[in-house]
Amino acid sequence: MFTGIIEERGKIKSVARGSNSAVLTIEATDILSDVHLGDSIAVNGVCLTCTSFTSTQFTADVMHETLNRSSLGQLRPGSIVNLERAMQANGRFGGHIVSGHIDGTGKITDIRRDDNAVWYTIETPAEIMRYIIEKGSIAIDGISLTVAAVSNTSFKVSIIPHTAAETTLSLKRSGDIVNLENDVIGKYVEKLIQPYDKKSSGITMEFLAGHGF
Image (tube, rainbow, N blue to C red; front, side, top):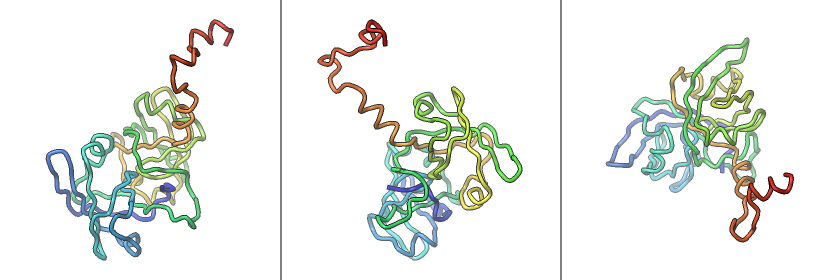
């Protein structure tokens, strides 16, 4: 589990591509002070497993499903990425519950400065928008952020200077693709309120409508 509080920005050193997979080598400093083989590290919000490391870099495998679901397939040598190690049990929970399991991607459609803040508008498909609510939580490239406004097809976040400086958001431009992870609570609530066996429950939309709901 992660918190969405980015520890440092790393740099892609190399990308070894297979037919449907890839191996990333990522240069870093701070997170390597306490890393072990098999540790989980979020790279732009995607939970990856450390498969090898030195004092200056680590490697991680990226499988086909991850490439399809996220923006990691667009990374090139020199790309800057957000990094966060899995949360320690005795750590301070500064962001929100982030699993590192990306729901999909969004596209930045507008970036606008507002005094000391910067507003980002992000467009994303309906299956992701359904879980995004105003003042709710969203992880953008692994960054824990608060949703400031919502429309049918997009949402907005307002970034303070510290967040921009410590993450990759300051490097983003309109048209860039970002990884999105919805607040996990909303997804579980939706699943749990659905009858396990709709045939045996007898509760349907027609039943509810017919009884005044």
